[in-house]
Image (cartoon, rainbow, N blue to C red):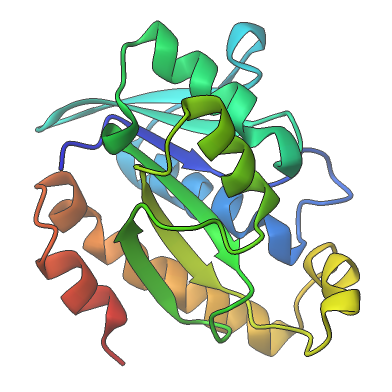
Length: 190
């Protein structure tokens, strides 16, 4: 595992900034702050990008401006330009199928109906990229999902999500070191 691109998924704009669907952006903003990476808007990559120089090499951070459903456009544009393989990409996203505050790390798999993942898979032509899944809980009825993900979490839920982001940030040295066994051990524990 050699991560060269970390894409946080979310929706651009102030009206979405604090919604559950932007958990991937929240993670990436905190990672960029810790890594002292500076964001700049890049039209040709359809998003905000930051370059971080790490002991393991150069890592690109990406927040697509394409809205969630078209996240793959930005991810594929950056990956193609810098010749980054799918297995060198980590997508960080909100996850309905996990309880609020839990976190999971995996390589590949389905998209669970997540439109951001669906588009990345389509544009890369493979599901073979890493995912950091930040649990936001489920509203209980699939007809309520859109309203749920596009609304702010309660203060208690936001606290749980923030703690899962903190835990995920603590795992980043293991992720960057390529320790694919230690990362789940750390993240999946209570």
